[in-house]
Length: 341
View 1 (spheres, rainbow, N blue to C red):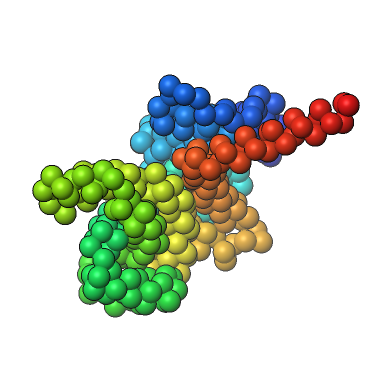
View 2: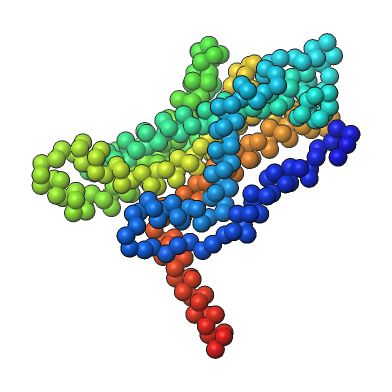
């Protein structure tokens, strides 16, 4: 479409074609067969889920953009391209693909640089929270007794407080005492320190079901220490639900970081993040919709991609999914045979 407007037909082809191909090529999940390893079955179940593949492709695309940002951005994120006029440019005008903001900074460059910041914060913060949650869950479930009681009561207390409230309190208390360049490190540490409770409960439940198994009892009979049993025999068997929780947690952490940046407690100036860009554009929403809409869409796109990937991994790693699918397939076949008869 001419006149500097969006070419929606091209965007529909780019994003709609993979969805259509995967949807038309969908197949029923395979039934478990003898002679196949667990991870082969997981891969097959995952590859038979169109939505999971879409989420995987989009997550890979996001991280490719993150690593290739220096080569994709037409300008630096803080460059005022037309500082003499400071004019808002609509998308596709005067070389601005996504338009410009109130300071004549390129929106595309800032969105791409914001992707690097937001995705890095999400990945590192979730890594910290998963590590802490794994440690607490292993200790609580394996040792039991007063250790389990104390740790779970701490988890209950922290879960009773909304996470955003904890983040706001810690950011207000500590952000003013540190230089602005350390605010991102502080935010990552606080995000990791306030997001481990759910993982600890998941791991604790898995450990409680594993520690009575025969291989754990055999390890005790051989004189293995508790540390060796936890790290080498119990922890690897808890990875499947933790991977799912971590994947879903990255999307949630990106959303929380965007909320903090929107409130002015996130990434400091002049560095961009998606939530900060939404906050900067809210005053120009009526005359410069692209300043808020484009970074807002990227937040939705990133969170949805991680949620689709997490849901696909959860279904692929859960053996009960195959059983339910097999039972429903058998029921459908019986109904078809009965209808034909």
